[in-house]
Length: 74
Image (cartoon, rainbow, N blue to C red; front, side, top):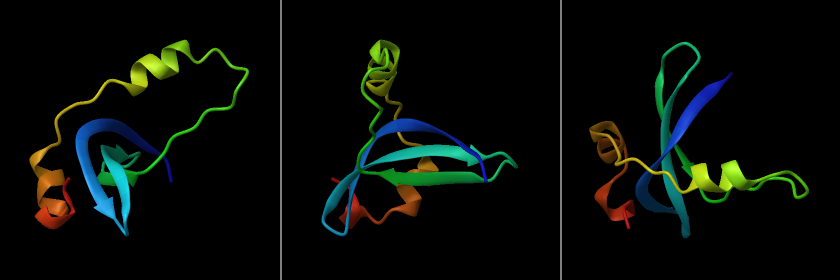
C-alpha cells in the first residue's frame, strides 16, 4: 500500500505519547488519518528542504476532528 500524507496542526495523545495527526489518502483514494509521534531522516543528507517542509502544517479537516475523541486532542 502507498499513501500520501500531509502534516496538520492537530496533536493528540495515544497511549501516553503525543502524536501529530497527518492526513492523506491511499493510492486508491481512501481518505486516512495517521498518528505520527516522530520522523527521522538519515544524517549526511542535505536536509535543508526536508526541515523546511516539516514545519509546514495545515489545519485539520473536519474528518480528523471527528475520528479522534476530544479527550485525545491536546
